[in-house]
Length: 110
Image 1 (cartoon, rainbow, N blue to C red):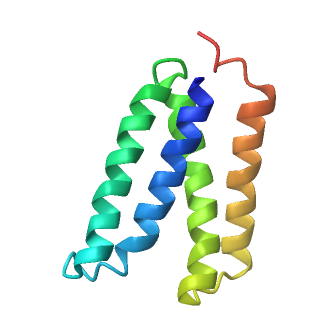
Image 2: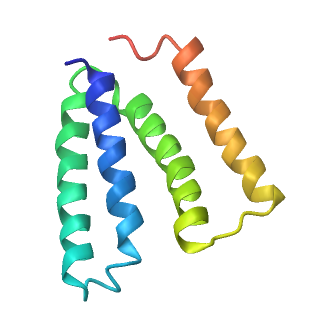
Image 3: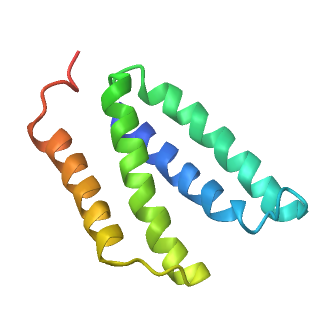
């Protein structure tokens, strides 16, 4: 499996874990807390595998950028979080940055 596949799994784990943080109510709710702990465990394991072939700066930028965008979308639907125009523009810039890194940067090669 290549580094970007590991990175995708890490992002999915992080998104799930982060999305359950609120439901864990400060780690007082058992099932959401278990989801958070397992999700972050999966995240860091697969992120460490991804970093064997992806430079840490590039990997972290993609991981955090994509995670922010997906968690924001989930928060909108799951928790009714509203995003104003500056928030939407910021998320758009994050997406643009991730795209620029993936499409034009040669830093991802060792």
